[in-house]
Length: 411
Ligand code: C5P
Image (cartoon, rainbow, N blue to C red; front, side, top):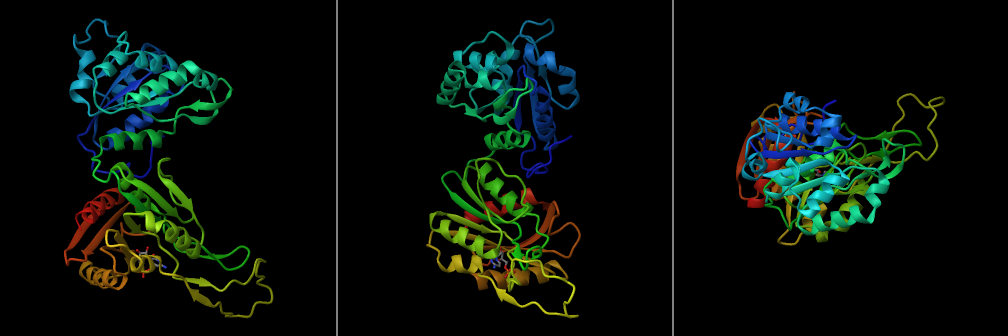
């Protein structure tokens, strides 16, 4: 199964170079998902399998999935004399996943007794370590001390997850999910041009209940808003995502506030807005809510033919928070429209930007192929408060998000 998550189709990381270290753990096979996902972005990935890892998986499997070169024993016949220095010369980040207790211990000691520890010692870029081991080995003071030492030296620890280990013991120690490893690897390679910025993103649809079982909503998948949240986080921002129902998974370092209705989304967003530098208002907020019938299920038996439901307007989150903005806050809005062509879309986006007082407004057609609700791609008509306007051809939502943030930073 290959990893499919926000940013797994981005073009922004093509040509970046990562070194993947794999040490002995049942979780070795999961490093293959990460390798495939990074290669799918056209990144160069080299790999080192420790002796322990080679008991679980073969170098050939890593080679077949595009890792090049794949290093083994330091003194194996045919191994280059300076192979232990190569990742330090070529790679821009190093990820060790899974990192066994033994590997953590060697790295903490600064050992150079095997290929992976020597390569780590000769590497001065960002080092990411994703431990995986039995929960008691993880909790042991020796392991915890090694982790603390490595963290102090600047290594980023991708904490293990809770669950049942292969041996049957339950607790913390399972390798973090592959998406988390993938996102952390990208973050180590991304420009940190949003470091220090606090960004809020509203994401996905809202759901307005009518009776005990029915609601009013729209087909928004949360992909565009999720991509914005991830892009800002990858670039170093501190991100809060206010998510409607059914939104995609996000990196664990993104603060996620799950809400249901437009009113709940408004309250959550309004509450944190004063602490933010940027707001990306990407949610497809229901403009109206049905006046509730009540908590019971409305019975169709006895309903009049053509009975009517009344609707009441919801607060406009973007417009309300734009009216409360400080001069240093930046706002990005969206317009999901049904327009006949991109020029008409641009005109709608221009009018909406002014009406809502956003700094930047991105319009997309929800009625054309490869655009809008639920799609992996979008084509956009973008306009800003200084009258700059652009029409962007179809590209994946991760890259749309990336380019919108670049524009927002410039305003
Ligand atoms: O007016 P319209 O719904 O087309 O505006 C779209 C923009 O306004 C989007 O950025 C959307 O997130 C935001 N919006 C909002 N609150 C609403 C309606 C829309 O924040 N109630």
